[in-house]
Image (cartoon, rainbow, N blue to C red; front, side):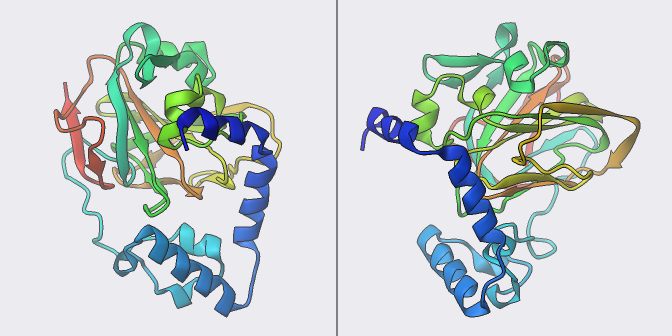
Length: 280
């Protein structure tokens, strides 16, 4: 199926309702034999490395519990150094670069603005001209999101939106995809300046959940923003949130503060905790 045909068909799908239904279904209690069989089939189909999981499949209460599984201690060593940036997730680099004139590349011939992505032109000014990196999480990946640098969490923004798929066909075809879909943005203050960790929703992503505050997306809420009077400490590699099904993370950095490694290029496979950059 070509990209245009796929997107034409997706336009007919009630993506928000489907995503909500999938989210509810993954959290429903079920006889262990059913959700364990579903997890086994999923793991086989997507080649999930079950040896890395914190628990065996028999230890998960629901399919959603399995999907948002933690890893065994030591599975993802975090590269040391206060001025070393690490990948916040397991995934593949879709695009990366500098946000020239406040714009980020989505795919060849398609870009979008920082202001639209963050839902706040004032916030976007902080990152205009700085490096950014888009990381796609496939269904087989570990789906918890971590801090790329140590420091403090200064606030978050929830931006409601659509639920387009974020697979390669959609990225190549849907204009402003990442700025159109639902987002939950965590803002960090670090030794290398301000950092925005943008978690992007998608079709069948039931919810995005923050683990540092009572924030859960896809509940019909309006856009909202919170700036903490007392920012929360977070260590590098500390957990920020969870995708309840898979999606994309976009990292944005201030200009002149961070330089991404030359190896961070489209198609590069990343693991959470892997060094991806450092001080500029």
